[in-house]
Image (cartoon, rainbow, N blue to C red; front, side, top):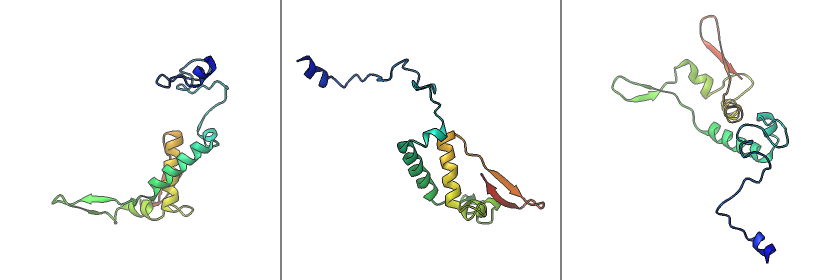
Length: 130
């Protein structure tokens, strides 16, 4: 009778099944004493799939820059210096999609995407790199 009762226990009060403190997972420590960071987390299939789906979904959205007119209306700012870099081709190695996908994956895994803008002597922006 006790065996059947243990099989069908109440699920309204779930318990943490990890041994040790209940706060270990929240503060970055694991019971296996393995480091968990963005690089090791990407080796887990579920993390990789979630990061990939979110990054591709965000990168697939259209990217347009707008500027407000004096009358309050807005129009696409295609002559803005960053427009062609972000909308078309940020650098010679990446398309706009790949660049934004990589930025989003860095944001999801490490909390902050890093990129660098390079300009010519005249001040014209040339490319964005990660």
